[in-house]
Every structure is written in structure tokens, then in C-alpha cells.
Length: 142
Image 1 (cartoon, rainbow, N blue to C red):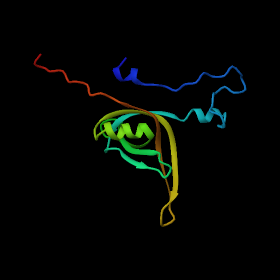
Image 2: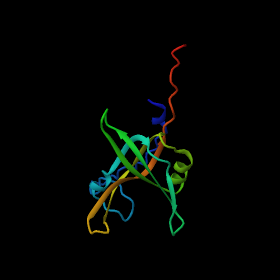
Image 3: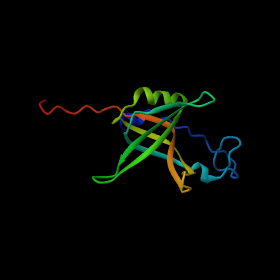
Image 4: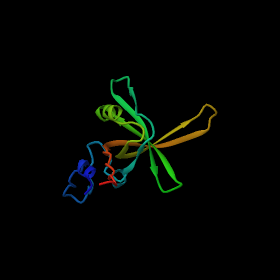
């Protein structure tokens, strides 16, 4: 097991005994199995220093992007949104190039630009952000 894997904290709830509701959902949420399957885990490197914004209600929201390398010629850039203490921790500790593992849910934003063209973007709303420590490189002179 890699060192950073032990840092992952999962928020699993035990499934209820009833067969009518096979997935435990927070109160007021749909019991559809579909809603429980939107979790994603992404391993990548921070593209830019996270940015913080305070909402009108006093909550802190953070935004940053990570680059996910799919091979020698393919990279995806994924936007990540964090809230409150997670946002503050990311702002304080992350810099461009740091490796992170983000666990969260996918969210699609839709809007129209000033010319009336429909736009959309998918981002990850982070439940957990793991700051992967740098692995020391072996000294070949040893």
C-alpha cells in the first residue's frame, strides 16, 4: 500500500437492511441508485495556485485545476471546486505542480454566453483532497 492511500478517508454509510432502499441516502435526497454512482477519483498535478472566494453567506469556495496525463501525448485539464476548510487548506498548501488525488462528484454547469451560444463545463466538487507527498529520488551514488 502506498503511503498516501492510507490517508484516504471514505464517507461510506452502511446500506439499510430493507430491500426497498438498497442505497443509503441523506434525508431529503432521492433514493435512486443513479445518484450514488457519480463519485469520481482523479489523480493529477495542480495547474495553478488555488483561488479563494467568499460567498455572500460567508462560506469559502476554492477553485483550481489539475492536469491528468493519459500518456505521452494526451492530457486532460479538470476543474475542481472545494468548500470551507478544504478550500482554505488547498489554498494554503497547494502550488502549481503539486500532485493531488481528488475524490468527489461530477457537476455540470450550463449557461449561455453573451451571443446566446449554449455552453457547458464539467467539474469535480471535492469531498476529499489528498496532498500526495513528493517521493525522494534515489541517489545513484549510494
